[in-house]
Image 1 (tube, one colour):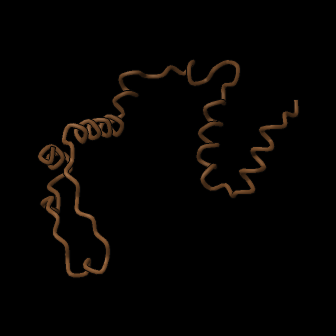
Image 2: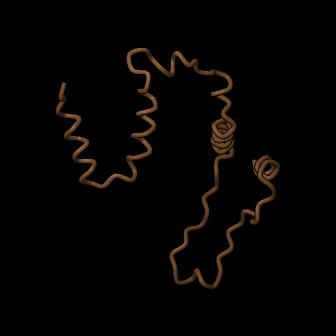
Length: 105
C-alpha cells in the first residue's frame, strides 16, 4: 500500500518506523499499532473515489431532479443552511429550533 500511496502522493518523509526523540521522554507516547493493509486499501480507494468525483461522473443528476417543481430552491436553501450552521451561536441554534416547532402558515 505504501508504494501505491507514494506513487500517487510522492514519497513519504518517514520510513514508517517508530523512533522516539529525547523530547518525547517527558510525554506519554504510544507506539504505532500494526495496520490491516486490506482495510487501509479499501479506505484509500473510497477516499480517492470521493476526491475524483467518480460517482458524480458515473451517476449525473438531472436539473429536473435537483429543482423539484414543489420547491425549486430546496437544495440551494439546504446548502446555505449547512454552511451557516457551524458559525451559528448556541442561542441562534435554539431560536432556529423554536422556529422549526412553530409553523406560521
